[in-house]
Length: 79
Image (cartoon, rainbow, N blue to C red; front, side, top):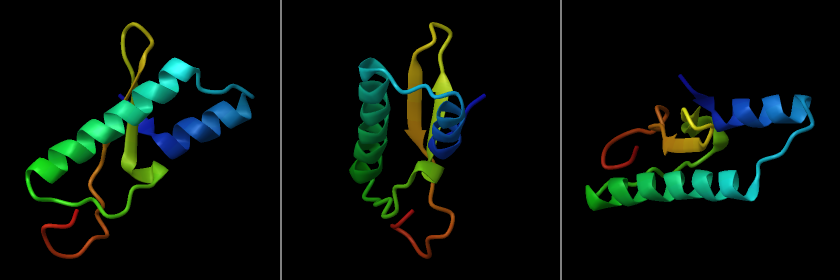
């Protein structure tokens, strides 16, 4: 299971820990892959915020991210 990026940021702030450079790159890569997939299908997210980024730790403790749909958006092709 995972949590949103905003939840992960709050957890790390509470424990005074930060993302490593590798974790930062992994987060960015996951977001960019998600955007690329949306754009390939003619969709635009339009509102990328930490609340719409799902963060999961893999079995080898790496961070993996993906975009969640913006449920507040009205009308396709905007999610």
